[in-house]
Image (cartoon, rainbow over all chains, first blue to last red):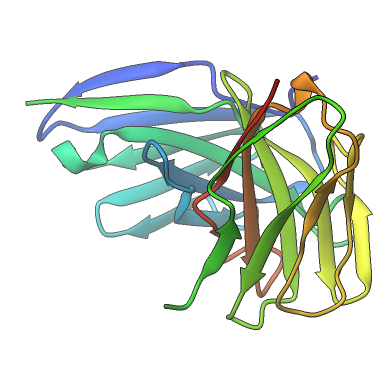
Length: 115
Length: 113
C-alpha cells in the first residue's frame, strides 16, 4: 500500500520551459514533505521541503506547492536546465509520535530536459 | 569533507553469507537511517536511529540488524544474505527529523548470488 505516489515514471520538458512534477499521499499523519534529486550512482540530494502549515515554499528556481485537502504536492522548476535531468523523489514524514523517524518515498519521476 | 561515508561501494555475496555495511557521519547528527532502493520501487526505510543506543524498525527490516553505539556510526548487518537482498543501500543522517533534509551517502551496491 503506497503512502506516497508519483504516478508519472518519466517526464520530458524542453530546456527553458517549466517542469512540473506531481506527488500524492494517503497518510494523513504526514506533516512534512520533501523533494530529492538523484543522479545515477549517487545518493539523493535534498532540494526543498514544505511543512503542512504552508501551501508554498520557494527556493530559487524551485517552488513546492502543497494542497493539503487534496493530499497533493507539486514541484515546479522554472526555467528548466539540462542539469535538472535526474530522478526526482517525493518524500514525507509525520510529526513526532506519528510513526517511524524516517522518510517515506515515492517511486520517483525521471525528468529529461530536452535541448 | 563533511558528510555521510558508506563502505564498501560494491559487494558481491554468496547466499547465506553475512556482512556489515558501514555508515559514518561527521556532522554530529542524531537521526540516522538505512534505505534500500530497488528498480521501480523508490527508497524504502529499513531501520532508523534517533540517537546513540536507540534504534527501531522501518518498513522492510527483516533480515537486517542495526546498532548505534556512537553518534557517528550506524552499521547495517545482513545476517544470512539472500538474493532478495540484492539492492542499492543508502545511509542518511539529519539533525532535525528531516525537515531540513537528510544527507545521504553515495550508496553500496550489493549483489547476492
